Image (cartoon, rainbow, N blue to C red):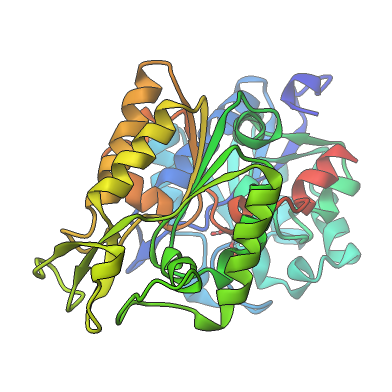
Length: 394
Ligand code: 3PG
């Protein structure tokens, strides 16, 4: 159910779960993406004459009041982006929250203090969820990026009030469905990042769903090592070599073409401007570290993109934070962006480092959809049900 399904919003109090777990330094928001993502829902509810009470977590205070983890610093930025006043309540439940809400005009917005200041949030305590529910008439979940948590404000509350997906939640779910649920084929996946261990479930799920899967970043080293390539002094999870071979075998069985590096960029040290060289796989020296994919690998990846209708991308192909080891990631991202702009590719990306990598390549605006989610995006790619989404469907 979405906001289109709410019978009438005028005069109602909407409890809106947003994800304002934003990067902050010295009490200042350093990236307001997640605030901007929440604006369409807030605006729509205001326009319809609802009172908007925003519920959010910040950091991990573990059920205690930790002043440095207050959501208060977010208010100024939200007011600026919304172009309207935003009130703040020092607690998300109880008399103070109730009084503040009673005092709010229709169309008004209030941000309630960090829900994780209460232990009942993370334990999904029904009594705490009920205290939240007592404050509102309807519940709107607009926090896809927190939907992998079965907490009171992301899951429990949806069972106590009429519950709806917000605008950003709806956009996320539509985009993810277009990428993996019901995609235009052929579908190519790119999975990078440093460790196979964090992405095992994800790889196992994807080989059963994709036509092609490119593996890049440090995790590709483990696959190369498993296949007998001497990877010198490169990062590798040797204990996962067996698992890597199983994934290769499973991909073969399921008809998913695996693209592993066929050449690499190496250096002796990981530092900006380090002397880098391209190596064939049989020319890696004992003290070489693989830090990026090589030009032939990137060329093959681009050809795979040309053959695909849908791309799903998680994780960089090299140590993109340290040029020149950003080259493969930037080149591949720009090719995906060009195809997307030309209407030839649906490109969906997300998860932690991926957003920074695409930002670095200056292509964020050109992708079809970039998720603001980290952990939730990964769990969705693993094929796991997300409690926050399931509760909306129940
Ligand atoms: C995130 O930043 O990925 C979400 O806000 C979830 O935060 P958490 O990992 O602390 O639950």
